[in-house]
Image 1 (cartoon, helix red, strand yellow):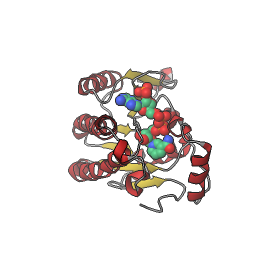
Image 2: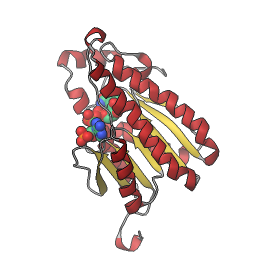
Image 3: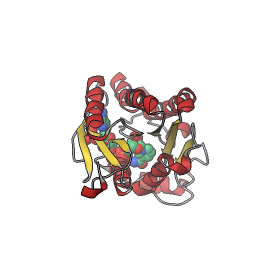
Image 4: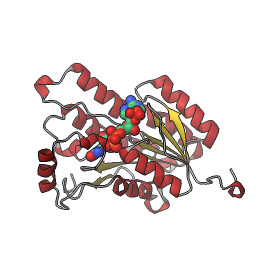
Length: 242
Ligand code: NDP
């Protein structure tokens, strides 16, 4: 791609779940940076300037097909942001096998599938950035979110193991752990729940999706070349480093 026709010339970036919420803000930030950005979702609607790829990350064949499409258009993925995630909240005694396995399969195993496939190209390039979007509740725990918190805590062990496996090839693996962010995922909370949460956040408010995106683009940039295996909270102080 050349600058002459105003096509982006930056890195090949993949953001999963980039049609709304945090993923959309992340994808838009990379586009603004001049990167070649692919966005995968199940339902489409990726932001302008991105390659809109349909992919259910619970389906290994769909993940493989998505990478083939992205590599053909943008080259090997240099920056992976594994952002797609779901919740299925309920108290543990009511939590079904399906509540458990759907959340683990999307949030944890889906991220494994993406990281494994992305690492293949990054190892050849001898560089790469893998960024997992976890959550403050992965380390703090959360009543009613046994499945979700376990999936998000699992990302920490996965990132740190990848950091050790891939570090010698200049590939970093890090975790961003947002607190409460204004998105569809948190729109389901009642006003009372939202008010209670805000009293626990030292900054006294939710984050905007853009405040998570700015940390992700920093982790993917030259300024974070020596950061790997880190868990970076973007939670207004809610977790105090946990
Ligand atoms: P949203 O619910 O707004 O968006 C979720 C995204 O994930 C959508 O783009 C959705 O696209 C995609 N997605 C879900 N399941 C799949 C699947 N099986 N295959 C492919 N894509 C899928 O979430 P948020 O923006 O709020 O959250 C983004 C990430 O940040 C999640 O991992 C979440 O756990 C995490 N997070 C969010 C917080 C918050 O307060 N909002 C706090 C901490 C962490 P589609 O439905 O089209 O497939």
